[in-house]
Amino acid sequence: MHDVIRDMALWIACENGKKKNKFVVKEQVELIKGHEITKWKNAQRISVWNSGIEERMAPPPFPNLETLLSVGGLMKPFLSGFFRYMPVIRVLALVENYELTELPVEIGELVTLQYLNLSLTGIKELPMELKKLTKLRCLVLDDMLGLKTIPHQMISSLSSLESFSFYNSGATIGDCSALLEELESLEHLNEIFITLRSVTPVKRLLNSHKLRRGINRLHVESCNHLSSLNVYPYLQKLEINICDDLEDVKFIVEKERGGGFAAYNVVQSNMAKHQNFCYLRHVAICHCPKLLNLTWFIYATRLQFLNVSFCDSMEEVVEDKKNGVSEIQQELGLFSRLVSLHLSCLPNLRRIYRRPLQFPSLKEMTVKYCPNLGKLPFDSKAGISNSLQKIHGAQEWWDGLEWEDQTIMQNLIPYFVPILVFAITIEV
Image 1 (tube, rainbow, N blue to C red):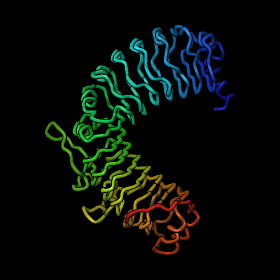
Image 2 (cartoon, rainbow, N blue to C red; image 1 turned 180 degrees about the vertical axis):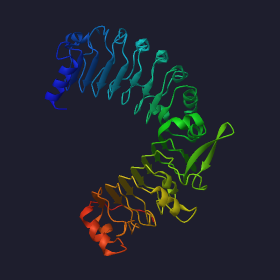
Image 3 (cartoon, helix red, strand yellow; image 1 turned 180 degrees about the horizontal axis):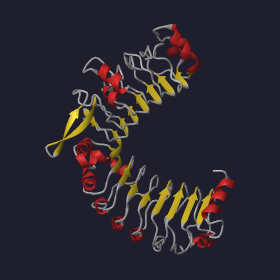
Image 4 (tube, rainbow, N blue to C red; image 1 turned 45 degrees about the vertical axis):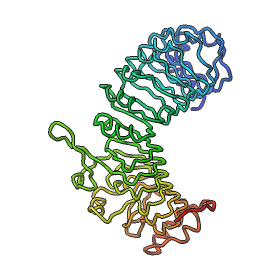
């Protein structure tokens, strides 16, 4: 935001300057001194970006403070008592404070807190006192690589929790089944973002009707011995990385039956043929050498971003040889909302899809180190989307492509952007 616009916004927010220091914003300040912080005692919202706070200071009371944001700062460990007098605070975000390695136990006194974000901090252990935050509705613990564990029964004590984000943190290494059990006990939980790194918790998550309905973003990593993965329609973002034994991904839909829920693989049954179930928008799949295809994408009608790489066995992204895939594809519109397609290091990939596709929303396509991908699913009848901006690839690969007719090649040439690729050995 431009400085003038920001200052005007703050002036308006402070009721034309009548309530000075009601909103405090500090950016790119090397070190904020203690005497300046004492001037903020009546603030309702404080935002500190890429700035340091003096370590040796006696924290003043903040009786009116509702929001405290500290992003990308050089905040040292808090002095005892920093959180002791914030009686109405609702939002606390301490993000990208890498030198912050611990939280004081006084954080448990912030009983009005509803949102807590500790992402990208150096915190190694969460204090058990967090269980006192019974009004907390959102807890974000993403990219906390130093975090070793979450205290037992801490999460289950957060009775108001609605959203829980635990993405790419150190404590997700190993069996997280106990954590999932606590999440399952939370009555109001309806949104989960999580990384899982072993087979047992993955199965525990997907076998729980409550948890899988709440999963929004799922990252499955380093799960050897996981041969098949079920994807449910509530998921919006899926990342799969380094799953050496994964052979199949199935799209599963649930129908209520006899007081419970029954699951159906919709690629094998045609029950979802005329319906739009899937909310999936982002998919990234990397280092799954046994995965053959992603035919279930015919039901991912809202998919916008797709990245597939290092899947050595994959020959087609979507296979249309069985189960009426081509007919269903025509009804649902395969890749009709796809914005970005990235394919790399797929040595056996021969085609994206056997039939031409319209790609009405596609803006960019990137193809790298896919030596056998000799044809793109475009033809002159399907035409070219007005959204298309770029097709990235090696010049040698582009020159070797086959075309149904020269018209489509000529139409696509203006969109091709050659990229430099380095010689690497790919086993075919």
